[in-house]
Image (cartoon, rainbow, N blue to C red):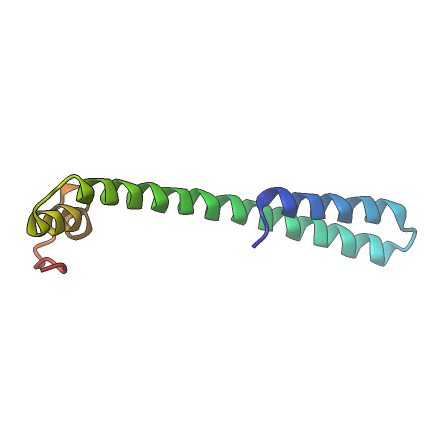
Length: 97
């Protein structure tokens, strides 16, 4: 998977190539490709932000689980966020029990 920076570098290369060509169709196609790679850079950034959030949540849950010695209490503390996100009672039985 390419990073946002790599996508932008490809977009920049497409722009440079479009300036170097004298063929109008090639110029238009390369500009279109540059726009595509810029959109991909934005998606890569959003994916990275989302992944960072997941990693932070996983670290938080793992830290909480390691701090509890009793296995039953450990499962309950970790599952609390899964079953009741943001403190909202979903009315469903715990999936970890």
